[in-house]
Image (cartoon, rainbow, N blue to C red; front, side, top):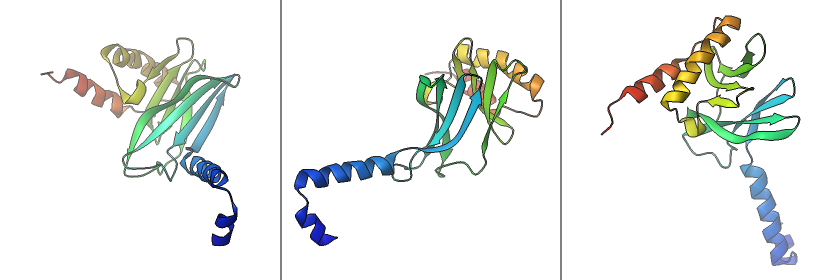
Length: 163
């Protein structure tokens, strides 16, 4: 291998290293779900790129066209990816979907409005919190077992006095 490096021209070595790093840094797909024309892909940071705390991302496509590019929706702590598998739950009319770990809602999306909870980088504003409060009962009507402790956590955060 060492002899090969002497034979390869410098720019070619640079291109090979660039391709190798790109391969190592790409996110790892954890799940993919199809709902009508919509596809929701869930990703973890790539092993080479990962540095705690890890984050989980989703990407939403309609008919193969990206509608929401990779967006962080969940921190994972010291792990790179969750120990449980994601599953997708939907309202009876499949208008609202949620990514769920165990029985806990991690992300909600309403197709007609394009609304997603939580906001980018897990930010939640008062209107976003209120919208999630409207969507959660619709999801629970189809899946009574689901819970959403993150919504309670966001409520406490919103209620904290600001300096």
